[in-house]
Each structure stands twice: as structure tokens, then as C-alpha cells.
Image (cartoon, rainbow, N blue to C red):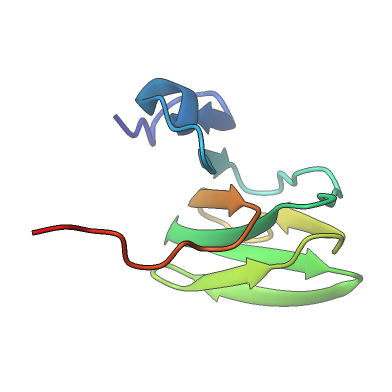
Length: 107
């Protein structure tokens, strides 16, 4: 269950759901909070803003995303999540590596 009102900045949804093939996290940043600058060797990430405004720093360049907007950041790219707004920021971070298998559903 998503707990948008948690005092925790990071909720590891992957573990709660038993997901093993990709990362899935809820991130809540209060006004003025920022995540650490980081990159991943293999994993690409997609950030989906649920509430508030994300200022995403990517290799020193910043872009602003609002609710219902999403962005992909590739592996090896330094990024930082920043809440420069006056409201709290709630977002979903999805991460994974490797090729997508494609459609493998069966009716």
C-alpha cells in the first residue's frame, strides 16, 4: 500500500510486493529536501510525479516535472531529486536493467 503520509522519505515497494526483476519505490520529499546525487552502473530509472513538483538535476542541468509527468534517466548518469517547491513532493521511482522481453502474455 502506498503511504504518502509517512514520515519516511523512502518506501521500498519492491520488497513489500516481492518484486524481483525491477526496483519500485515511493519517495516523499518535504519542501527544501533533496536526495543525494547518485548514478547506477546498470540500472535506468523512471520517475513519475504523483504530487508536488520535482526539480530533477541531471548532470548539472535541472528540469521541473509536475504531477502526472514522468522522465527516464539512463544508467551511468548522475542525478538528484530536489523538492524546491512549497508543497511536499511524492513520486514513484522505477528502476531496472536488461532488455525488455516483449509481450509474453497468454490468453
